Length: 117
Image 1 (cartoon, helix red, strand yellow):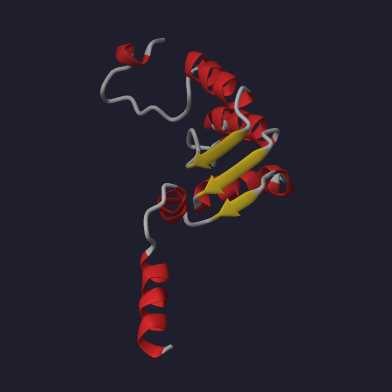
Image 2 (spheres, one colour; image 1 turned 90 degrees about the vertical axis):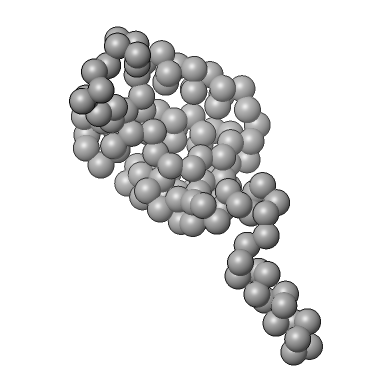
């Protein structure tokens, strides 16, 4: 079923097969992978397939960063913690850092150093 054919009152709780194939293809072609958030409602077995497949594919990347507590929990549940380069429970902060934005805590430390050094 195509996503446009899903009735508005039906929640989408996992990736469909076509979307998953596209994601896995992109991940497998990449040397660096950043995951931020699970692909579905992984806590429910019926909706965990997409998340698990993406995690398995990302675990094989040369360099892999995970951001977010839910994604970290899914990885831990699978026993894949050692297969990733870095896992951060701070999803938003991780993405902000990776995109070169200044983190408030770092800015405060820099300001403190200027003031008290």
